[in-house]
Length: 290
Ligand code: A2P
Image (cartoon, rainbow, N blue to C red; front, side, top):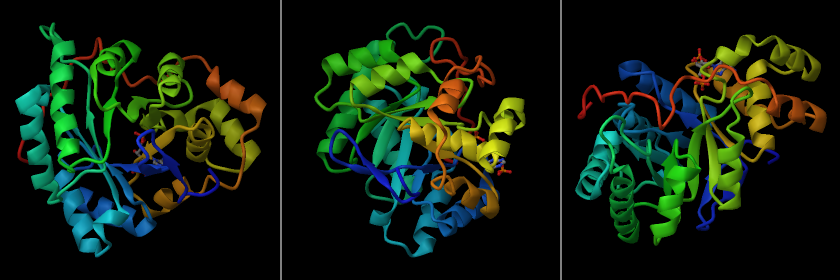
């Protein structure tokens, strides 16, 4: 990748921007303003989810921009309690309604399983996937994907699907590189995306990353993002400021050396955000209808 506007071609032929903008965690009026600013800053790939409660404002920002829908790449996800054949179809309809759009570029299962008591999570994921395959066949989704799926969650899908997943979205940043899952995805032509590429900003004060920033004359955030891009991983970065939104795009004029990449790949594990598909307690969506 040599510029912010470069693209990857997914295994189903769909083209995806090499960086996306995450819409998690800034709500209400602020979030509308943030999305508007992100569009102005040049972002066209937006990542949302029913959990985030940002679909409505994202749709509004896209409409109000006057930029044609097809120039955007819009991704959303269904939540734990939206898994299941009928549940997924209903969830998708709600998502399109909130976005006020007639198709998604990608639709993902947000997490592979609910927690306690979700003993039939494999069957539920497969039922969900079947519904998503049908929605794609109806022309409403351009590609199907996964989020927070580890190899043992992906395997049942690959063994039973008609349509293969084209992406998997994982928490990845220096200090939490999930090498085994990344390798598995790469072996199965599933493009990896990184959520919280800055470790929810916890990485920004890391002394070694600060040294790297000094060495490359870039910010720590830029080091984290460049690290991912050099690994062929799509960062989904969030920011509320135009300056930082632009700064985060400015990572294509330098190269992290092979030696430094190895160092970053092999840092001690740190700043894991504490959410694991097999152990974390799922959040409850606060308000389904936003
Ligand atoms: P802000 O909105 O003030 O820019 P992550 O994507 O890993 O979850 O991290 C998101 C956090 O990182 C946000 O709080 C955001 O704060 C901050 N952030 C994003 N870009 C930068 C940057 N270039 N420099 C410093 N902080 C950043």
